[in-house]
Amino acid sequence: MPKRLAAKPGNFSSLFLRIEELILASSGADVFEETLKLLASKLYHETRNVALLKSGDDPLFSSLPAAIREQCTQLLAPFTLSQAGETLDALFETLITRTSKGQKGQFFTPRYVVDFCVRLVQLQGGERVLDPACGSGAFLNAALELGAGSVSGYDIDARAVRIAKLLMLARGGDARSIHEGDGLRDFSNESADVVLTNPPFAGEINDPQRLREFELGAGRVRVERDVLFLERGIKALRPGGKLAIVLPHSKFAGKPSRYIREWLLDHVEVLAVVGLGRNTFLPHTHQKTNVLLARRRTVARNGELPAIFFAQSEIDAKDSRGRLTGSSDLDGILAEYTRRQASDSDAAAVLNPKPLEACSLDENLTLAPERNTAASTSSGAVRIGDIAKNTSTYCKPAEPGPFVVVDTTHAVDGFISARPLEVVEALQSNKKRLQAGDVIVSRLRPYLRQIAYVDAELVQRFRDAQLCCSTEFYVLRAGRDNAAFLVPFLLTPEIQALLARSQEGGHHPRVPAAVVTNIPLSPGVLKARESLSTEFARVVAAIRDAERARELLVRRSATPPQ
Image (tube, rainbow, N blue to C red):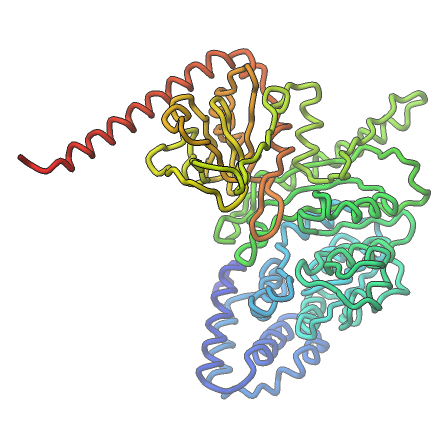
């Protein structure tokens, strides 16, 4: 007997690519259809489940040449597909091309995220589970493994539905629980105990008639599909039912999406928001996402919000190339959430309990984890905003020059290099006015460490021009105090990590100003602030001297020989 190989997603991705090459090189057959038949046949021989033959449109009738079919069969032989959880999910990612899935904003949900969501809702035996955008059915299969009574899934992609049926059958489920249809429409009469889903991120609905079917769509010109899936999922829940949904970070913060959160808080109790790492959906997208856990209200909201559990995953289970690392802190986050829930239940059982802490959200009802975890763990702490204000006084194109503009490429690791700076007579767009003692922090790409101190010598060097900077910078100004100590503090690995995970937005994610100004300062930093500022100012002066010495050497070297 040949040795059975470990079932790893990477192994299967390479295997499927090899099968694809063989099919394309030997016939004009549809790669998807023939691969599905091969896999259905393989699963049938492992499980003897006759229904699998139908799921592949009778894989015994492959159109591949016998020699090629045999080669593909031999490639699959060392593996046991029916016992490979993550690898069967990887099948979905491989068979549905990355291009077609990406265009629809649909991305394979990693098994570790699926398992986290399913355990987060704390399934009770016999509960009915619904996924209105089920894709490969990963959430539904995981729910069945953890004791769900029944599952139901919808997807508009016919190929995704066929794969979901195959995977459901491979794990002993009922393929009839998977339906081809529009999840925004086709289950309006269903009622579920639990909704588990990762809806498509991309695409908008702009049909007025369709938008009128949704409270979050009525009166709007266009609404993103994930917003409508959120509403549909909540309305499919019975009162008291739970929802775990993966959504883009933009739905949890920012003024434009405030109406979504206001509607959400009126219809559900938000139990937890957990931020996922930026590598979660690589290699497809860097889009930052959060998991929302909520319970449909049984009584109307009375204005006060109960405590919400906020957490941000710090250890990604994928590397920067989208490869699984095997490490994740989601288990620890789940354990902490479970502990908090038990603690709250114990407190509620006391005759005269101390009232559970209410949740206090800002005016935009921000539910972003990094905004709320910092506030909850550092109550009463002195924050950057208490020391230095984020100022925005502008130099405008209509003003007379000259000007010197500091761009994001000129400021790095605490220092603004004078060498590339140029004097210009007019501005093409608004810039932020600078003065000595300011600290500038780039809101874009924090990993580039574009943070710097505006030293007096730099201002003096360009004393005949107004120094200003790109609007991509936040300008922190401390008045009479010396804020130079903020620069080395902001460059520490801990704060850099905080800034990196606090980015919001899609194509060009930026760090919100509130994140920077709300960063708490440790007692040690506060106590040493004067000495740190003095020492850092000396470092900047030394770099400035070195920069000047370099320029002198360059000029001397350019002097023609006598």
